[in-house]
Image 1 (cartoon, rainbow, N blue to C red):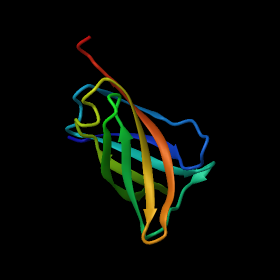
Image 2 (cartoon, rainbow, N blue to C red; image 1 turned 45 degrees about the vertical axis):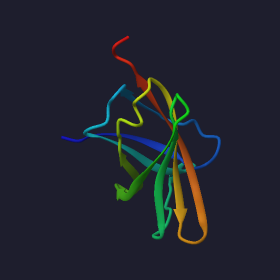
Image 3 (cartoon, helix red, strand yellow; image 1 turned 120 degrees about the vertical axis):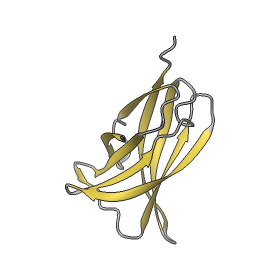
Image 4 (cartoon, rainbow, N blue to C red; image 1 turned 60 degrees about the vertical axis):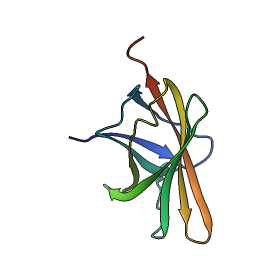
Amino acid sequence: MVFSQVHRINIVPGEIPPIYHAAKGDGSGRNIVCELMDGDGPAYPGNDVTASIVAITPDGQSLTANASLSTYDGYTRASFPLTSAFTAVAGRVVCRVKLTEGISGLVGTGKFYIDVEDLNT
């Protein structure tokens, strides 16, 4: 069974990033789903756009993951499977959904956090 955590992520700078919650070592069977917003409404990034997740873990490690784009109920969603690399260290993981279009390059980014809790302390 796959569990999905869904939050709305704004690609407009200055918005408050949402927080996903995970336990140290989580990964298998969980998807992070970001519904992309452009201000107050849904974002429509276009057909040639790809998505990736870039992150910095609490211990300074840089991570990158491919994200898939889909549409659900009028919203474009970027989703990726949470892996244990994102939850290896307790603390706040700073993440961005990065939208890129073919040759033109960066279309936009949206920030979010993953708060990783160590349940053994």
